[in-house]
Image (cartoon, rainbow, N blue to C red; front, side, top):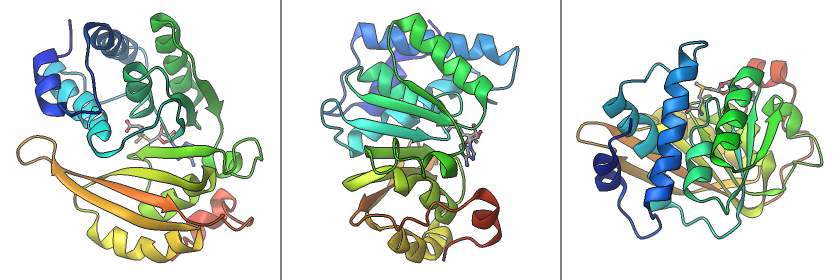
Length: 238
Ligand code: SAM
């Protein structure tokens, strides 16, 4: 056992989350594969068991406290990297229909390995977000988009909001110090058809504040968004 199960349970306890023995075993398999694979190529800087329990696993599991994902909800995890939060959500709630999107193939290969190891499945999407967001197969097809540590909020909103159907939500996991970024992103979010619905500040553990933003998709994203990467970088939405 690599993860600290008692700590994980105490930090994340809530009505929407059941960490039974089977779920904990799946999460631990993921953690073990993360540490093992990390020796071959870099997936994360955090591999010490207690730190990993808190900063990766509890951090992502806490989404369940603040977001009530309906059964079989369709979710795209944008810039999933080694699977945070998408893979934690899937291993905890196998009913969720998750698409794992990243531009780095190696990281997606790791996610595929973990899914196979625990006998679950999900769509692995190797693409840049701004390209997949213009593809009718993915555009406005998801109940939720999630993202943790991918980019600043105006750019990230242009990556993520096009995937969300009207009435759905983009859940952005941010550091607590996102104040200024948030103010500058409001116009961008509006342009993309979104509206900040909830801005939740909480302590992961003492002195480790985190923020979850829930951005509701209130109208369709205009077809010109997302723009090509170079345009997004050169002229971020305001
Ligand atoms: N979400 C994970 C986490 O919290 O550990 C990974 C965070 S990592 C800092 C950012 C990830 O976003 C990288 O894996 C990178 O390849 C991916 N990424 C950045 N920009 C992207 C884009 N435009 N389209 C797809 N993936 C992107």
